Image 1 (spheres, helix red, strand yellow):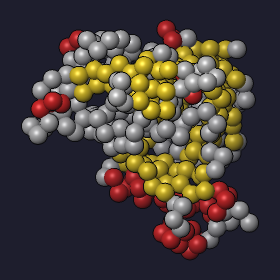
Image 2 (cartoon, helix red, strand yellow):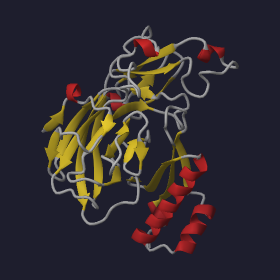
Image 3 (cartoon, one colour):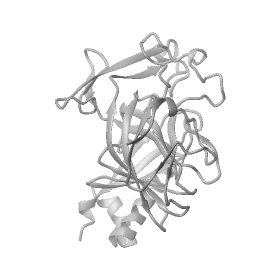
Length: 321
């Protein structure tokens, strides 16, 4: 099986000029070994998120949030759609999350001196599940707080058409740092293709995350991700779409928040129309009246140029004839 090793997964921008690290056929299974968003800096709770101590933070923008890629997909052309099938994901033994001055919306607040005055790092321990895998186990933040592991890929995308955008705060219809927990094994992600070969990148793996990633840091971890890349020839998805066994999910990154919500909702309505024959009037009524229609805010943290990330979803069972 072809693999991008962790040592080679140190790209910090989505750039169509990058030399491909792998060339794969559509449907070929391969693996990317990822770094965490801190490039391995956070090993103990003594490793604080002080910018002057962190490798790569002497650059502007910082060299943070590394990804593996690009992966060249044989036969992929501009105007096609890349379908990312996440096969499996195994996380490392620990993850980290951090707080401190300037981090997130409360990092400069006088109301929260425990966040704005001192730096804090939490190292989270991953206990394997009954099958021996950490991905199905329990995350322990302390003796008091623990929860079920829910690993996913935070950053993935194809090379944008013209821009060169950082993996830290780059986002768009092509993907980027979107931090959506539905980007996990068992689901498929649809991304537009702008360059020959698609030029796909992946990294920023999380052991778990709460909606909005409020502090700006999830349970950041290293992982081994196995995946396959498929092509839909001659059709370009209008944006990021995710399909689970039960749901259609349309995603939009934008500001203000209501623009992200409206963009995701309109794309979901268009998807219902094109693939399921739902009229515009019925789609409009469904997203207002159906209690199974959902809006989720996946990312709403204040970091660099990050947009807000929202998704709109509806169960497939609602659309079956």
